[in-house]
Image 1: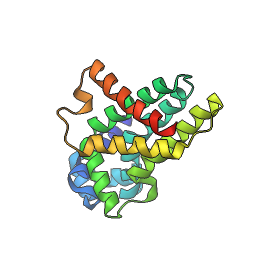
Image 2 (image 1 turned 135 degrees about the vertical axis):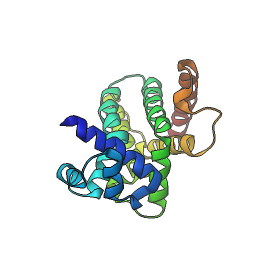
Image 3 (image 1 turned 90 degrees about the vertical axis):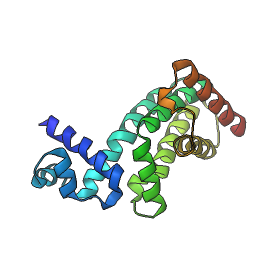
Length: 187
């Protein structure tokens, strides 16, 4: 049963990346090699399927990790881990991210799947939790906006190599530079 769901989610992601929200449920069902009625049984409608795909790829993985990472006492280490995690996920899913940004800029997305808002809100929650654990008062909104800009720019602007293809040392060094830039603006 779970295999069909994964099959549908993978197919939906491919079709949404190619066609955005203009993709039809018939196209998704064909790509998934399932009957269209199967899509509606599992996801009710195209919007619910789209929301599930986006949250599955970009949000679920991060929200659980950021709460765990927020417990780190070393703020630079906390930021480095967040940056490495987000850049790796966004880099691996850059086609999906570009489509989401495009749809967002055209005003086609509900706030619930608006990528910039998703990035900002989960970052701000994690940053607030981290600084509350340390007993420090910091402008987490500013830090979250700065991090969000870093993440989106890494996907949009050309790089010699995508983040997920860098070796571990290169990833760490880049993430450390970005973490230090965040620390500099919030001091």
